[in-house]
Length: 290
Ligand SMILES: NC(=O)c1ccc[n+]([C@@H]2O[C@H](COP(=O)([O-])OP(=O)(O)OC[C@H]3O[C@@H](n4cnc5c(N)ncnc54)[C@H](OP(=O)(O)O)[C@@H]3O)[C@@H](O)[C@H]2O)c1
Image (cartoon, rainbow, N blue to C red; front, side, top):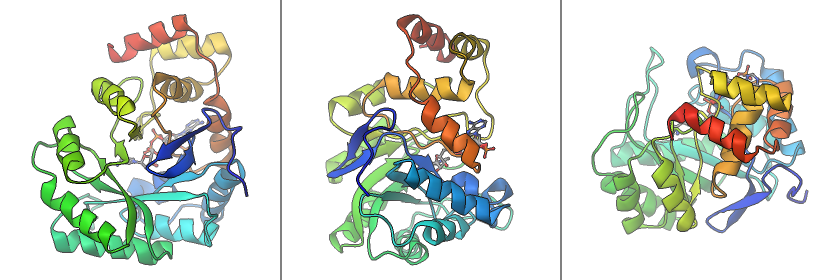
């Protein structure tokens, strides 16, 4: 299969890897509360296969989703993986019996998590691993050096190809970059959550990808009068506008919207191509107070 150039936004780079700017986030494939297997396993497999059929070459996952079950579905649906497909994963948290996400960042935790991802995805090396910091409530100050250093060791051992960071402050990004190359930053960012505006621009200038999680608002889908008004003008859905806005916001932004439904996946891929005018962008800027 040749990489698609017809998807909205074209392609971008993650280190020396080229991916479609429209990707797919697999977290929604786990059961309720991101625990357990998919509610509809056949549909979960179908979503992943449709993503690849549409030309998506960037899928975001984690051993922590399920835990394990999302990686297993990714493997069932797509292994052996197409050469051009980049499967990104993340380490730094475990799951507890109540569905919590306790941080797990001791060197032995990170090594275990990388090996768990290798096993469940069925690969000998991982394309991209994000070092996830903070906790389920958000970013936290503190050094990333020890944790990132463990991933750098695993990269030198050949188990990981590229490294990124997630749920991080600008200071943690800078600290990681001083240790070893960071190919992407995966933080919460969308039309309504704009804390990372300056970071997005700085990373764009430095050729580093920015991969917003919760691009559609996550567990609480984006809703606002301005978003609704712009969507109505284009006869489009608010989701389409939210994704198109991200693609137009900066060329280093890669999308990983999540969905458990093939129909939503198709809608999101098509909708991301919506062309927003300067007036639209100004109105949308009022949502996040930019
Ligand atoms: N690094 C981190 O800490 C971190 C944290 C969270 C997430 N992530 C990654 O980021 C990815 C994206 O985040 P997310 O999936 O949580 O949130 P999201 O992409 O902002 O939103 C997903 C939600 O939107 C709904 N949705 C999607 N398309 C829709 C459409 N066309 N119409 C109506 N509803 C639609 C989905 O429901 P349906 O299933 O019904 O479509 C789902 O409830 C995740 O999949 C995961 O890979 C990373």
